[in-house]
Amino acid sequence: MTAAIDVQNVTVRYGDVLALDDATLQVDAGRVTGLIGMNGSGKSTLFKSIMGAVRPERGAVRIGGLTPAAARASGRVAYVPQSEDVDWAFPVSVRDVVMMGRYGRLGITRRAGSADRRAVEHALERVELADLGDRQIGALSGGQKKRAFVARSIAQDAETLLLDEPFAGVDQRSEATIVRLLRELASGGRTVLVSTHDLHALPDLADEAALLLRRVLFRGSVREALTPERLAQAFGLERSAPRTANNAECSETAERTHPTEQTGETA
Ligand SMILES: Nc1ncnc2c1ncn2[C@@H]1O[C@H](COP(=O)(O)OP(=O)(O)OP(=O)(O)O)[C@@H](O)[C@H]1O
Image 1 (spheres, rainbow, N blue to C red):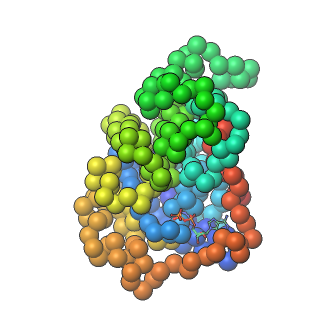
Image 2: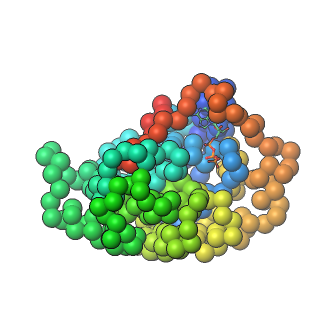
């Protein structure tokens, strides 16, 4: 079976910081895969590589057999970025953000039709934000913002969903709603790759797990991933802790993503 996401020997450097070192990962459709790694292990960089927002020095990525650019252009892949990467002051409503998921389908006039509006309302209902569609995106709680971005992915009807730390700073209701939705989407045949620090939530969330420390150390069942030996390896308790790069000293800085954009283009 061809992997829905195929990351082959990807190496990414920011200046002299080696963020990914020969990372290889296959992610299957129809399941939720949890991406686990310590701060700075390269999780966001892996997502940005899959989205084509950073250019690997070596290696290749395919999404459903397509290059990242082609997968993005066809709307097959949706990305829920880390909250810090989003400019929340951007003056758009929650409904506008969710409508952005439909942009690939709007055609040349960019005018939303009734099917688009129905898809947006349906997505808002699924994330339990139907009452807050008119609110400015920046005026939502952390968990509600995450749910708005998940709604955008649902409205987009993307085959592949990438979520970077969707549970960070999120209330329990939002976490439960997002976990339930991701499981439903995977059951419906979607490919879901989600990074999280929350190891306790992993068994409920994911069918598979991948451990990352600049390279993929392990990919397999959640139970096998959570063994003390594997976690010690992934969290740098053994010899090879990653260099802790100080972002302030780095020449490149990640740009902020408008709520209306799919990615922060950094390369
Ligand atoms: N734009 C950038 N410029 C320079 N270095 C960067 C940039 N983005 C990330 N890095 C560095 O690359 C490494 C991997 O960062 P990345 O954000 O991918 O890790 P992460 O696993 O997502 O971390 P976290 O869990 O803290 O979000 C880190 O050392 C980080 O400091």
